[in-house]
Structures are given as structure tokens and as C-alpha cells.
Image (tube, rainbow, N blue to C red; front, side, top):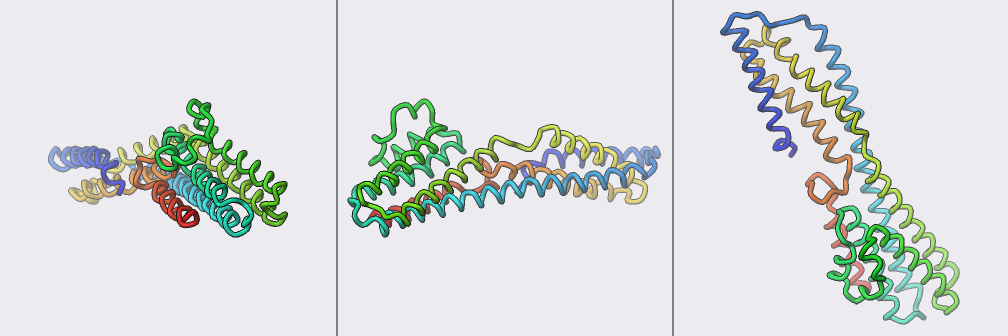
Length: 275
């Protein structure tokens, strides 16, 4: 729920509307003004909130689609390894399968701003020695470098007669698909919604909420207070949801994609292949 995040704002506008209501009803001071401002701002806020939420959800949905594309590629490459390359040694196929999992872990580390190499050493110690020491200082390059290694491996497997042409074509297509997913994920992470847009939306909602009690107090009297609180919860809640899901890969937000769970599920599948 976004309630804990917007509760201070709701509290502020509840107190604010209570002050306006007390001054108007108890102090007998007429604070109501013409109603033209509220309808105008209502239309503008509705359009901006719809655009904000739709844009954020599009990014969230695309993030989920790209992660599914990555899982699809890893599953297909694992299938080719163990069903389409019977002449390759089992040790080599197990090593490549673990390297596929290392790619997923390195992408997750990139998104969570963690040292991917340490995660790989902890979860897949069998292949940690394969990763050059330079990656300790340049972790963001690790996913792309793993894909380059995989491309080289599958291409060289033809010369060793470990893979036939159709399976090679499929393998390289899956690696290209993984590279496409990685690039698109990086685009989402590195291209946030412009901060000026978020600030403008927040300022318009603030102006609307500051004006709302003055518009309601004559007709609703003490009912102005709960109605203002409800309006604050609605507008700032929707805005908070959009802000929360616009980058779907954060590790510390419960509303974002559960990448850790996705990675753990894929690790179990690869372990089943290896076993």
C-alpha cells in the first residue's frame, strides 16, 4: 500500500482543511471564493494523472516483458545445450548452463547496484574463476561480456562438431534476444520520466488541494475535513503509485518486480538441467 508514503501529506491537508473550516464556521469568516478555479484544475489534474500513471505502468509492463524475454532465451539455450549438443562433454555443457545463470545474476546485480561478481562467486563458485579480474572494477560490463563469450562458444562448437547448423542458428538468435533484452532494460533504467514533469504535476495537485477546502466549506461545513482528506489520499496516492512503478527494477520497493524470486526460480530450473 502507498498509504504509509502519503500519510504525512494526508495529515497536513486534513489539519489544513480543519483550520479553514473552524475559521469559517466558528470564527464566522466567509472564506469561500468563486468556483471557477476548481473545475479548471480538476480537468488538468485528471489528464496529467492519467498520463503519469499510464506512462509508469507502460514502463513496469515493459520491464516484466523484457525479463520474461530474458528467461525465455536462457531456457531455450539450456534446452539446446542438453538436447541438441549430445557430442559435447557433460562438463562443458554444465559450465555453459551455469554461465547462463551467471548472466541473469549479473543483470540483476546491475539493476540493484550490487557487485555481480561477488554474487556469482557466492551462488555459482564453479565458474567464478572464468571471469577475468577486470570485472571486479567494471561490473556493469559483465552481462555483455558473458554474452560475447557465449557467442564465441557456440560458434566454435561448429568446428568441433558439437552442434549442427540449425541449433547454432537458434543459439545465436537466442543470444541476440538476450542482448536485446539487456539493452532495453538498460534503457528503462537510464531514462527516467523527466523530473520537471513530476514537479509540475505535484505543484498543480498542491495548488488544487490548497484551494479545495475554500470551495467546499460553505456546502459541506464540517464534512469538508474528511472530503479533503479523501481527495488528498486519492490524488497523492495515484501520483505516488506512478512514481513507485516507473522504475520496476528497484530492490527496496515492494511494488516493483520480484527479480530475486524470478532469478531463484530460474536457478532451480538450470540445476535440474545440470543434475
